Structures are given as C-alpha cells and as structure tokens.
Image (tube, rainbow, N blue to C red; front, side, top):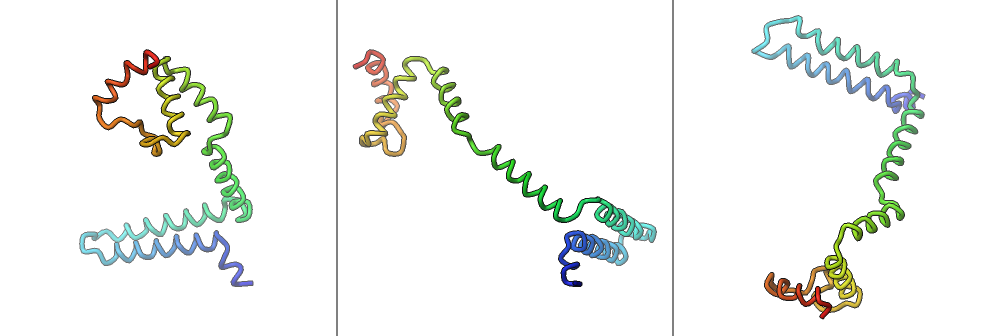
Length: 143
C-alpha cells in the first residue's frame, strides 16, 4: 500500500518540490555573497505554495493522465495531413501555376514515373543552368 502511494504523481511532484527547495536553501545559506537570512524563506514559501497547488488541484492522477494522452492524440491528428487536405493543397498549387509551369511539372512527373535517367531523385535532367534555359523555349513551343 505504501509503495502504491509513493508512485502517485502528486507524491512524486511534492518530493521534487521540497528537494529543490532544500537544495536552493542550502545554496543560499552557504553562499558568501548573501548576508540576508530572510532570503532563506523564499524557497520554503515557494515550495509550500507549490505543494498546495499540487494537492488542491482537484484532479485525480487518472484524470490528469487521461487528459494528457487525449490532448496528445488530438495534436497528432491535427498535425497529420488528411487525404482531402493534401488533395486541396495540390489543387491550389496547380491553380497557381501558369500553363508553362504546369507543363514542366507534368513532364518532370512523367520522367520520374517512367524512371528516365537523372529523374530518379526528383530533379530535372539538366546539368547546367544554360541547358535548362536553352530547353525552356523548346518546351513552351511543344517541341
């Protein structure tokens, strides 16, 4: 029974709070730069108020854990792209492209899907900027 109580999150949080308060108080007590003894009451007061906040929060540990896991699941759902959302993004992207850009995109996609040389990693098969610029007018004319 005592072991179960020690695993309770409120008990663990209380232990950490008071250990931190003791360490800070000892640091203040043995500090050569601080002569004011009333400063020792600050960590103790903070620990007392923190302990009250933890124990009077009114939520059981089971409810708190359920709320945390539920919010994490909701966040992962919101972060994952939905199929309809991906389709709408693609539709918007295609609407923003002009005819030349759309044709170049289609050509690059065809080369990638057919597995032509140089397009396996998604890049166009131009070695230099000059070859890309020379090829652009040909593509616009359809040749």
